[in-house]
Image 1 (tube, rainbow, N blue to C red):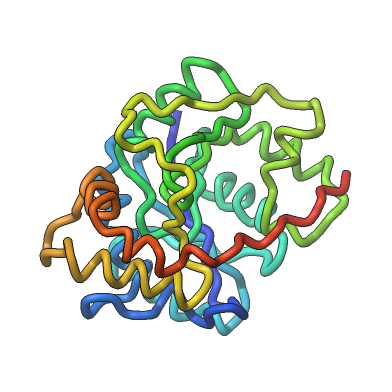
Image 2 (image 1 turned 180 degrees about the horizontal axis):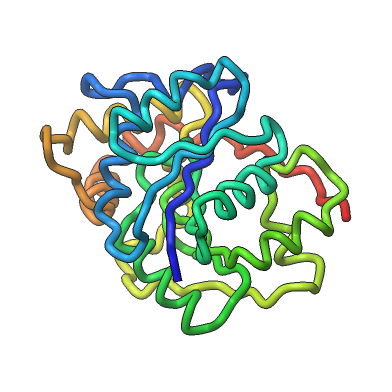
Length: 244
């Protein structure tokens, strides 16, 4: 079975424009993310999944520069774009993450792949890791089926098609490291405050050519409540209800 990490990325964000390309320690945020994801052992390839809109051309250049694949698909139907990318590259198991999340953990990607395959799930998610550090596992046939079920073109948030329709076998992979269980910790980037927190973490931990682990991030933030406070007032955008 061919396994791949698919990174959903666009540059249309309204709360923090062009955030994936904003620089941290001299490199675009998404390049730091790609460097981290390359540490995952089980997926064979990484594919940056962006749109066919000209605004997103720089993301294709980022993919080329960093030695990963790029797929350009539907601007708004994210689920269709991911499914089409999986079909194009012959992927059986998709590990999905977004460019909003520079700290997606590669160790838990490998654990997720194994758990998803052992359980024979259509869809598997992780709970209890800091928000923005987890990923999702999907089986390609289930993605095709979900695309047939949906009645919506805007599928930026698509998990409900697998968990709320009663059509799929899905489950939650537990976090086996108690030190990393901190779901209230917000490590995604949607606003200027989110980006400031991520920037401060890099200033504290980053060394060129090295990837600092999630455990080191969590240890830092337990010691530095002043950093946690930077984006503590940010609310996550509510997902639109699914339509089938």
